[in-house]
Length: 274
Length: 152
Ligand SMILES: Cc1cc2nc3c(=O)[nH]c(=O)nc-3n(C[C@H](O)[C@H](O)[C@H](O)COP(=O)(O)OP(=O)(O)OC[C@H]3O[C@@H](n4cnc5c(N)ncnc54)[C@H](O)[C@@H]3O)c2cc1C
Ligand code: FES
Ligand code: FES
Image (tube, rainbow over all chains, first blue to last red; front, side):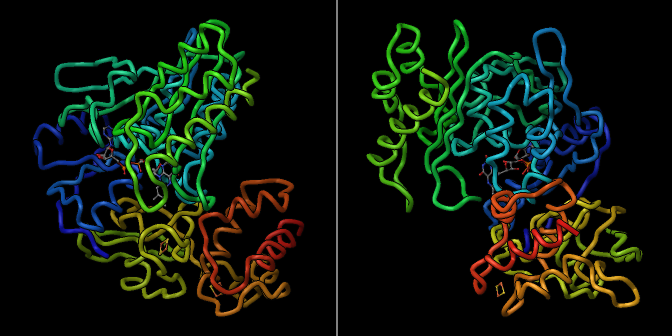
């Protein structure tokens, strides 16, 4: 399967990327690892006229620490996130969730920025970042914006990113002492989650997020509040399907997804020591 | 557009459409047909090659994206005198293939896995091959071969 034809532009700086986006307007699409975009283009579900390749933006490949945060460049590949000692120590949930993405070949190519910008409710990475309360940093013609992750996902495969903006960095609050668990239910090792859950329990802050249970990556405020008010794992997990709107597909009915959400949140809370 | 790839140490320069997939470039432009296409949807791993030493699925990368980079395919593993790469030798000795269709991708995935992990365990090999499907062998001897080669 071959994508529809397009014009290819390669850029090697953030400025260059922003200029190319400005020049080609809404006909242009950024390509990072291409592991979400190229499959869509091969199925002709996407047919951008201009492809702006940002793979060589070396300036956006980094994992650094700054005060209470980790700063992760948008072009950092999944394999570099899952193996980063800084991330394993300070945001173990993100390293583990990333390790569950696809297979080693996919993780050698896919980028953290692409996984977030794609806005897929079935993706593992946004879920971990919701539990960790990450901040998304975006550059555009009018400067830099910081978007709390809760405001970033606006609809199915839709985000707060404008067509002329580039996601440059993910800021993750360090949580070295937090207990966490990443739960992913699928039938075959490399598959996407039928349902998944990210759990982070910190002294006075908890984060609970569900995968593939809504039109967007989903924060379960209901479960978070239950935990804050002292509920047991059993009690809190019973509420895990509240507020979700999962869809049915070949893998699972709506009821089965809700059942899985409750089970996975319970397992996750227990694994995190609740 | 002109794309120039260093494949197995040889530079291949061709004028191709931007939409040309890496696997097409390898098979059709460079004429190296050892790399197979199975699913064409990044699920089966038959098209696995190395990009700068790391395993990738060449059906899901544009040739243009890796312009001027180093690619290794199954043809690039053996020594020029014909001596097999230790992983190929292990596949041979462990009877790790039947029809052979998945084998080029399997071998490339196994080499990358061994390069990236010291002291591989059986479960790491099984998990590390999650992106490669084999319809014949039941994987058992493939895992055995990867472990044997990782020890040598
Ligand atoms: C076989 C296979 C299995 C997979 N399994 C899983 C899985 O189990 N779990 C999971 O979570 N994911 C999975 N994925 C998806 C994988 O994680 C992708 O790598 C990721 O979703 C997209 O990252 P990318 O760099 O490839 O983005 P691309 O495909 O290049 O881009 C995706 C979208 O984001 C936009 N974009 C990319 N970078 C930026 C940026 N810096 N700024 C603004 N916009 C940007 C692009 O324009 C495009 O719209 C799988 C993919 C494959 C092929
Ligand atoms: S042909 Fe590329 S993964 Fe199947
Ligand atoms: S040997 Fe036939 S598919 Fe693996």
